[in-house]
Length: 158
Image (cartoon, rainbow, N blue to C red; front, side, top):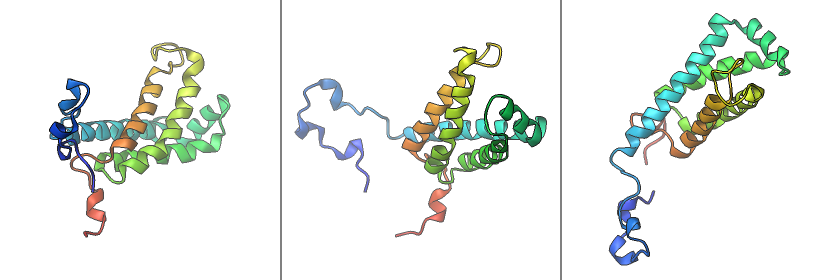
């Protein structure tokens, strides 16, 4: 059983601050906001994985990885992770765990872009977008599937 804000008797709690008497999160729309984040992240990962596969090719991506000091073979792991993870996020299949698995990929991407500076428009791309998407994977992990996720279809009913 999950406790929601509506389950708490705010009158009996007598909060010290009046702003705490109002719901902090709109529980009616939050699942849709979570879905929007999940689908956006899924599209991002799918696009970047397909870019590595179709445009740069896996050998080309491996060569690039090696040129920046990463193991080249990681291209053969990262691209499928991004493609499969992106599809799973879009579908809402085990979004928490997919986001958690993609977190290290984005963390490495952030540190890879770190020498180029903050702005992503800098030569070599800065680290602002990879850092934001790194944090977004953590947020998705904390939030779960949201509305319209398919994970519940795979779980046995109680």
